[in-house]
Length: 72
Image (cartoon, rainbow, N blue to C red; front, side, top):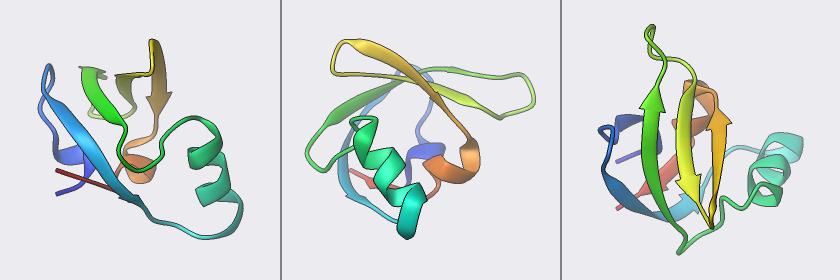
């Protein structure tokens, strides 16, 4: 399952972060690293972007980027 498939209010644990090059590095730098628990806070009316809560702060990412993050 990927992060973009998690329902609002649910938590998930990051298993792996996909992508290559700068995108992957940017996601990792924002704290989206394996074994981190994230909670989906909000989803914009048209489904993009997604606001998630992790490590004590909120982060908004594009649905396309969330689809590269595998979660359990």
